[in-house]
Length: 369
Image 1 (cartoon, rainbow, N blue to C red):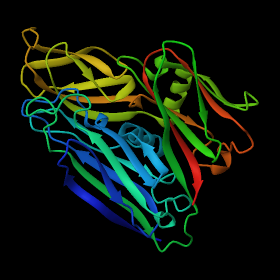
Image 2: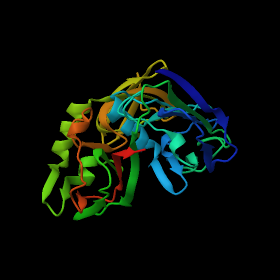
Image 3: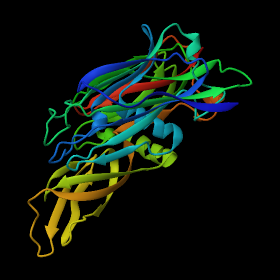
């Protein structure tokens, strides 16, 4: 086997600040992954708490009406981390005329160049990649304090495998199958498909200054009304177990803040922060940090608070990237342990809710080619 990068587009500037770009996937060799990089430029003053990854609302692979992969950029990044154990590209810079450079891999196998699980686009009639974005998703585009208009760029590359001993006959299909706003209490029941074997599920539950396990307090996966219960766990305990299993992520962010600003970070659980302030005679710390946010404390050496926006370089370490909770259904590296729902008529995810969070479910299943 040999590998090759097929460049689909490279730093292609988009004329529209909100649109969907479609790319034909006319690739004849098996594809191990699609790799993306996105970037945009800040206004001339700064671009505080307006992360680019929340402006990329959907990445899809489709064949007509058949959806082969679909999720938000945040979900794609989190899933990449749980599959590879490595922090995806997330370079955040809120400075004047600077910007974010972010990326992710949409893996069709357990890892890059998995020869057993990969995508073969030649088996489909009209496979296409669709990328949807809106630079005004959080704040209207601006020449000064938001994303500057007409600066969004897309790069996409297919990691192909040639001269294989055998063409893979299946791939791992990652799809967001539902999204909703949570309730203050009660159980939310979501029926899942029973067509293909499951490798894992992933929940995303985001609400300002709330842990993912505070929004959804209990997780249960039930087949045929509790004939078989694959998962029945307290979310907080389960999240701690997943942190031990998958480890922490580490992210750097260059922000521009004044004293007591409330600052967003991409790591939801137990964010630990380290600060560097390039401005001489300024000191930085934080009063509290949890649930993906913290309060910035900025002072000068005389003890006075800093009232003007100042550059602060922040290192953030923790887990639950983008407020997600992985739910592996077996050893993620051993297919013989994965969950096969074929013998059941009904598969249901039962989630106990405790807040009006933005929730979604992503499934990963084996799909035959």
